[in-house]
Image (spheres, rainbow, N blue to C red):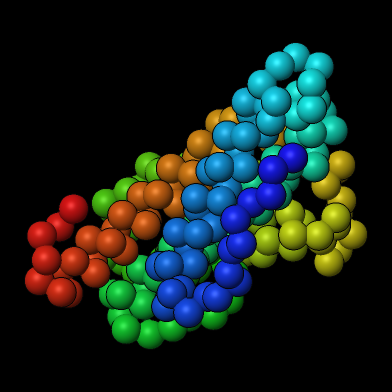
Length: 176
């Protein structure tokens, strides 16, 4: 295997929630795509999609997507209200920015439905660790589906776009 180039762990370019959410979102999207397509791209080869592969890789991608949505909502709050927020209850955070709730209502509603299905609307412990604080384990949860990933991903990208538009408006730039 070829060595990769030396990559600095310097995070000085990550200034805020927007920068970090973009990193999480791109990483989650890339991991999901790699896992779906198989790392080797051949049946039976390294990276072939199996139930074990789902458990080991898609759970991580799902966590990254969930966290990117949380950070996207926090970035929107920061750009809208000028304050940093804390906590992990995405729905409560989202409801604190009423100006944007009707813009992407369907995307957010689908994402919240998926997060509620896995009991991670208020907290992401289950997909961060092997079990949540109450002892519920991943194997006790419904199987992850592509529709679940699509719902969370679509909502994350949509909120990210709202943040980007808000940044452009504040700076007097054309809205993308």
